[in-house]
Image (cartoon, rainbow, N blue to C red):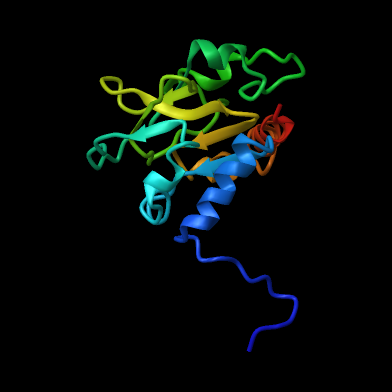
Length: 183
């Protein structure tokens, strides 16, 4: 039995639901945050319905690897407040880079969705094997709104040993703030 306060959500496969989301972002100035996951995103989407919003295109999957992928800031990432972990709005590149040689940087990830940026999107951080770096965190302005895409669902690793601070909470707070600003 459903409780009266349980929210009923529309069938996410319905065209109208996706069209409403596209309209809300592009015309109403909404913010959308997409997080890839091995089991749901984007495999449960009908990608053509979200095509106007997606800042990335799905690429050939990476082969299975036990490697921990390190990060690299892009030129856009160096200028973005989203990737900053200090009071200074400019990001500190040493926090993101050379993870294998340091113990105080952001923990690496093990899985990411293979993508490539669309022409009007900006990759902030890249990740993957040295011979095939791919966008990990991508932003895009779409009409009046904004879309942020994470090609991994493994940012939980950032809080595994240290809790919400200093990586997990500050990063996602800045992502949410960026997305909500809209036009």
